[in-house]
Length: 166
Image (cartoon, rainbow, N blue to C red; front, top):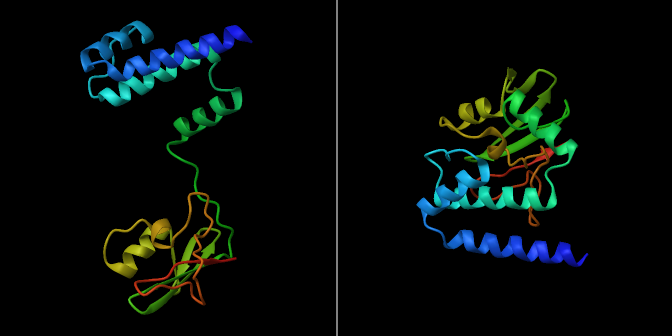
């Protein structure tokens, strides 16, 4: 147990030292730690963070198998997992005094009698400008609606309301 604390203190000290290194010194340290030249566009901060991660990984172990599998899936399938909104979920947004209701369908999103492939397409149709649909409809990353303490009715504020109903 004592050796583990000593090792942790040594890693902490090394990471603290990394913060004080100049960019060229960090690039040299990268070559030692990773065994190759660092990518040119990496900033000093990112170089330091990645070196610190590798030092910790070597000292305390890397990611577990499940995390590695998850990250591999993200890399292979391009990006983060899609939101999981169940068909039948109703999203409500008030914009410029007009209430817009979107129903989640199995093959997209229904708004004003038309099915759209994405919420962003609907947000663009409503506003006339490029919007992130999930942000326009105030969805959290996992698809859940964001709520505020003072929501009423259509979940509103003076400049637009957000919300989802399941």
